[in-house]
Length: 131
Image 1 (cartoon, rainbow, N blue to C red):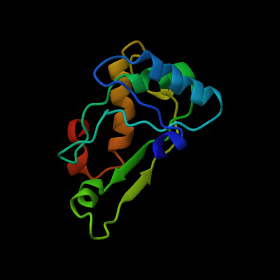
Image 2: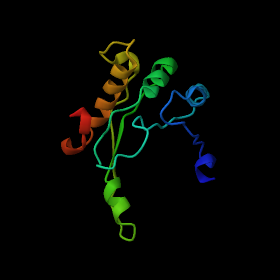
Image 3: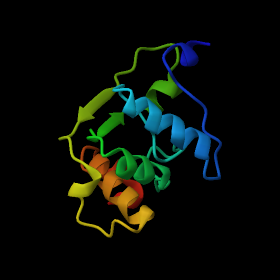
Image 4: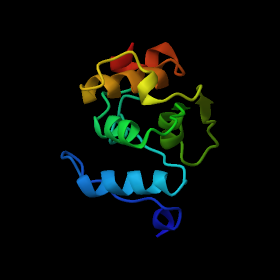
């Protein structure tokens, strides 16, 4: 209920969820912000895992500015539910998919370039596949 109240919508994992992609584009077209975790799920290791190309599709088809965010400390927060844990959010410089120096016809290359913008905001040991 709470997630729906803030505008969250489900994405079917493991497939190209065209309905979710349309919904994302509609949110942006309506002038609303859209948050996305390109990895598709939490990393058990706390390191970045490869992003899925849906983020590239939305970035390229909307033309919207992207603001990379790194959320650091969530693994420790999950482990200590009864004690206060600090979570750090680092915010990068806005950019557009068209600014990326990669093959625009390769969705995974675009996604990886977007994810590298997130990775540089994280401690090196948490950058995972984007070291």
